[in-house]
Image: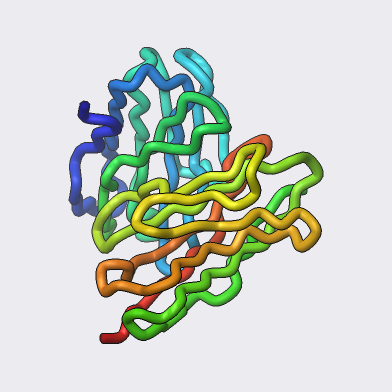
Amino acid sequence: NAGVTQTPKFRILKIGQSMTLQCTQDMNHNYMYWYRQDPGMGLKLIYYSVGAGITDKGEVPNGYNVSRSTTEDFPLRLELAAPSQTSVYFCASSLDRVNGYTFGSGTRLTVV
Amino acid sequence: AQSVTQLGSHVSVSEGALVLLRCNYSSSVPPYLFWYVQYPNQGLQLLLKYTTGATLVKGINGFEAEFKKSETSFHLTKPSAHMSDAAEYFCALTGNQFYFGTGTSLTVIP
């Protein structure tokens, strides 16, 4: 049972480059989320999805885009990377709002 | 408005001592409350949750938390700290979205 799988685990980007962070879950969860975690700042919600074809902005969506074409996949796209996007990114999924999240192991991104 | 506040960004305890990590919440509707643990370079793992019913909830690794509506608190405790408990702990609340606290780093001193 894989749970939530994130790739890559580490990445270094140059300013202005683009990349996609992949997230896949095999639990048939409707809800999926992308968070970023910065030291001392907790987790900030970037985007979330309540089901295939439905996405919505979270607290810090600027500079990011998402899509949800299938229940399993929820990729996060960074366009024109900036140093402010250096962070650890976590994908999570949940069956509903009651049962809490299952988190991926994270992607550590550095923009230089 | 809904929010979660964790009191104390860093807590140090001696091995074998009581662990107490504080969490207060604000919610206009009955909340669902969670504690997560994050070990270094890993994702977050669910420790325990309160939805309805018994206000004292038990989780993994000997942790427990008590929901106190009158105090709007959901503090996490463990009677005897172990070195392996050293980690970052996050309190969270479900409302319209999932709200996380800013985390408490627990250090266990041998």
